[in-house]
Length: 199
Image (cartoon, rainbow, N blue to C red):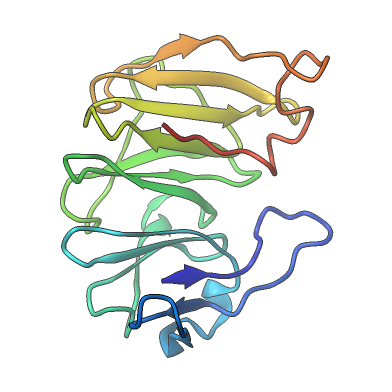
């Protein structure tokens, strides 16, 4: 599966053409007809669970879920579906198959968790968790409970917080936001755009 479109609101962003699928190891791709619409113009992230469920983080349609190989999709998280915005930024799957998504692109929402293959979601709200207008998250492959999250500040264009959770998002510890490139913040005022988290 391949998502298209760049939905960070940069001036030179190109609108996408939905989700494309390959059944021959990436030699050829075909557009999924179910995604040939405005909901899928900007696909920020795609993840496929061990059960074959396809999850797409879209900028304008929240988290979209398919259980039939992309023939059809249903919004399972977004405005009117347990979240305050349709702007989804990231999806990550932990080693124990828990799924984490982040909601908010120039909107402040938060991190959500699913333990049932993406069918339902719970917002992580306690344990000192920070807020941000965009959040990137990563799951440690060697530890199913360890997460790292980077938060785009609600006050400026830098990263305001980097946090780690060692209990699946119940509690969070603040880490030092590094300086780099001769500047006080490693994102150089670009946290809204070029930001990623990975183990």
